[in-house]
Length: 196
Image (cartoon, rainbow, N blue to C red):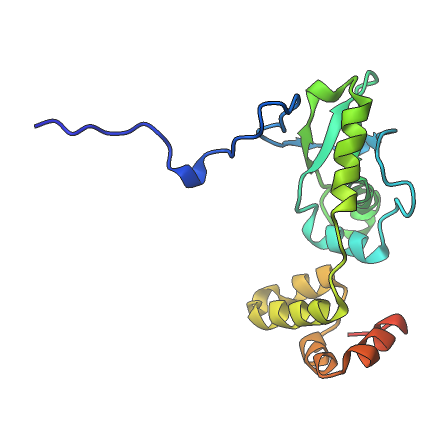
């Protein structure tokens, strides 16, 4: 008796099908790029506040860039960043100070959109969507997430996690206390620079 085996991958591991009228499909894999090769793409939709915050730089110094950016090749051999420019700049800053701070140089994972070389409209649209659909977390969600991640963190990783989050020892207890504040008081405390 022979058994028929299927060569079809399970549905959960298959790449979701995109509508047929989408002309440019996302790259299947990211590549590792030197941050020195990254420049802001002129079609990057974010014009206001394009610089990374000090907190983002500290996080990337501690953990590296966790989510791949999106770039398209340029004629000069560099890559134009149209999604993730602040992460790219934070990695550049992390590398600028790496030797003095005793850290290794970082690379950045990037999706390279070869097909978008001459597609400014499509590139700008993807960049706009990336930024338009992003809402910041509520203050209450921030302090709850901070408390939980620090409480769940194994002791051997607490120093790295605290550095990445930009908090001091004991921040979980401070976050727990902050969660007991009413919304108006919590907003005011955050506005005045709540220091966990």
